[in-house]
Image (cartoon, rainbow, N blue to C red; front, side, top):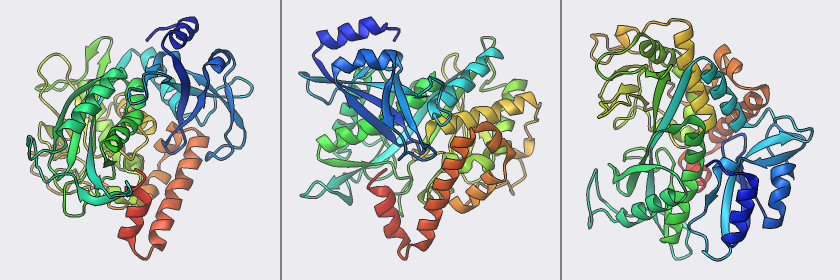
Length: 427
């Protein structure tokens, strides 16, 4: 939305807006915010709002939040009187320079460099989650909200009304939900988003989880994005669809891969093991991979839904590829950047898409994705590609957090209970 600061200030006054949430993500991709009153908004636009960032990983200074005007959104679950609006913010240093640990700015800068080379990219996501019942105190239980299965309808599907409310709220906020459904597990749901520019898609993914959790709570339920919340059921994934145009023409095709399209896929397959800890950043992530359609091997195919990368059939003129290994615990700003950087490295280095990585090839001993977070971290730490594509501030802070997670997990006597307390209740 291309508003001016003056238009935003008029909107705030005319629509009885009483609180403005300045949102951003910390180094781990967790959504944070500061709420300011309407009288402070003009100062936020002009100078930024200072905050103590010393408790954020990788930062030892005060920083400024500067609202990105294009991200204005009204929070539909708040009262219509005394409304609440939200902006995503750019994080700046006190001297006015961009903060090098700002994940959003890191992705935006990369997109700009891509455009200068004639490439434009759109990303769409398909994100699964579970709905669980709550107890009398409102705390989550481990009881799924229903026992429906894939594409079931009411009354088997008890999640239908909640999904509808989530989609309507997302639409009211300016998101682009495309479809929703009950998926394979009991109480498991999926909402698909239309393609958006890469930065908007990352913003939407971050806030999508908040919308789902808020609407679920209003309905007396608990929403979990934990990749494997029920050990003997389907895991929840984040499928990332990428469309790329070069000088206005798509590089992917369902029935006839272009040279650049092949190189892009080859680039991702070449680096996927090194970047897996950013796509699957918690110990529980690795209990999903390799089970119930979640990929285990470094391979690709047309249409087949069990492979790491598939090229789905598309009705229309928007061919894409789908990366199927990620889950919703990832930081989308980092995940999207590394996937794009890997793909474009494939183009720049003229990598060949090895026929033996195609699912229908005779070869069956494909390379495997890491089987644990510890293994994935080791691969990433030894990767020059990862180091070259993350700022030192982000690189150091992320690895400290990942290693801390592994250490806590290994020290836990009851690892299942550790994941329940550490992930289930907070993700």
